Length: 275
Image (cartoon, rainbow, N blue to C red; front, side):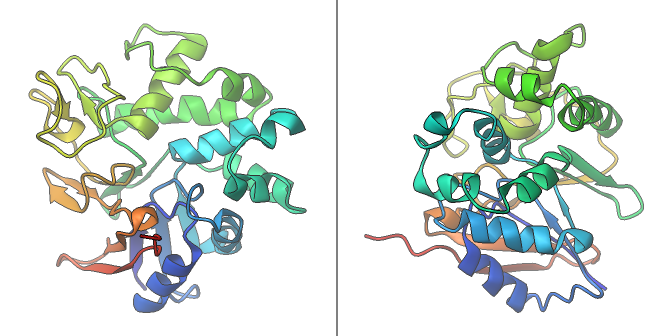
């Protein structure tokens, strides 16, 4: 039995299948952890979503910003849905869209396995959040996504503000939690997210830090695996294992074995991008 975490798929079916072959994935014995952003841009989002859905009994998936965006677009009228890219339209107008999207909406924002010693999120954690706090805040949003109020949440989740504050309530609190868990790359020591900063470390404005390097950050009792930040590439350090290696941009798709004392990383070429 093996447990593998895999970086952002972004609708890249071919690389996903090749990676599963390379790690010799056996659904009878192995478990996959997907770091979010299953869909968008890769050209095969529908097929990729169907593949992961078919493996749902053998995998753990956390929601990424592109997954949440797909869920939000699915609640709009047909005319608005036809304005999005063709890759997402194929999901939105598929015969099995309801089964796929209902399952996706039930996926968590955070997955933790304390016996294994790992936590998975799409983007990152706020500087002052312990793993226990992160779990509690993720559950708040997950309850809303799975309940009767999910349409209101999906309609109102967009926006770069407010900054996180424990005193926030309602949709502003939920939006701040979503932004941290699914959109964060850089932030200030006080936790203000700079969503406009997307480059590799060293390119950010003064006063900003990669979320995992913020001075005075909380100590965490679990190793963290995440995706989201393709410009960062494969990063392993400070208890963080970032696996978005830009498969959709012609980079690589990466898997990391979690139930192994040694560092075991497997990569395959990503999507072929026309020159």
